[in-house]
Length: 134
Image 1 (cartoon, one colour):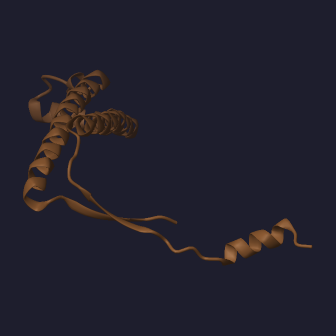
Image 2: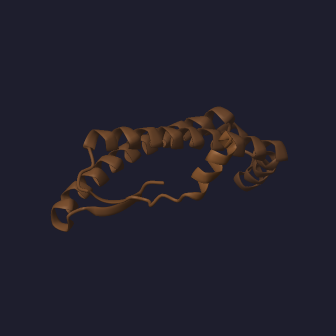
Image 3: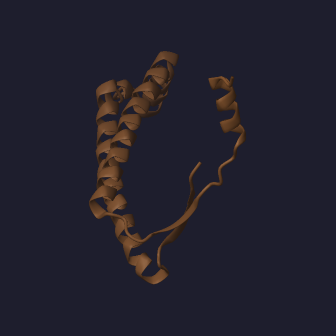
């Protein structure tokens, strides 16, 4: 009598031939590219905000802001403190502005790249991509 394990062992030794398919990418949907680049830009904006926060916290915890404040006071003659200019709200404000600009630029670049690819396909015929099935 053959068991289920014997049947599975026979099936695993039999190798099937992989089917190969060659496809040509001839069109990138404009709105799909815009949505994907927008989502990637949102992820980059979050990374920018978090990294600015973490860098500020590390610099603040190590006391570099206080040392830079003392240096700035000695150079400027003690007029204004650097720590009043560089605080967490100001740093996060600059980070938010940079994140918003990156969001807009990244989304526009995704749209431009999709448009340029669609124009280049008319000249080159597109990308030839090979796929296999396991």
